[in-house]
Image 1 (spheres, rainbow, N blue to C red):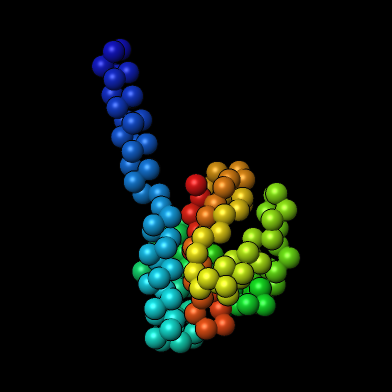
Image 2 (image 1 turned 90 degrees about the vertical axis):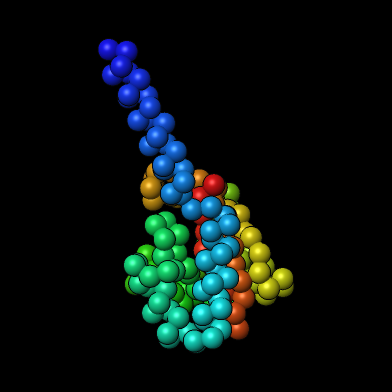
Length: 149
């Protein structure tokens, strides 16, 4: 019985460690945004947006993906839900009432790039959790990617 319990506990900790190493970090989000922003600036919207949609490509890693919002607050590219492209997000609030998309636009327009924190429903846990997104201005849009904390 002790051996079984020891194996069970070891397995739990191994799984927990593996799950933690597979989770995206804020550094991963920033790196992905900078990479995607370079491609957008170099290749243009049509080619870049197509690349962002590819689940097996370099711009989508598990829960981490690139999104594009224009400065009117409208999705231009949203890989998890392509049918949402064209939807205005300018008045979207998190659970605390923060206009986080407006905050993303403000950061991109005033500083060029940076972090925005908000609370959002994590589809993995089905719970509201703190999230942080890195955004960067490229022309008339922002490139972003976010991770749950």
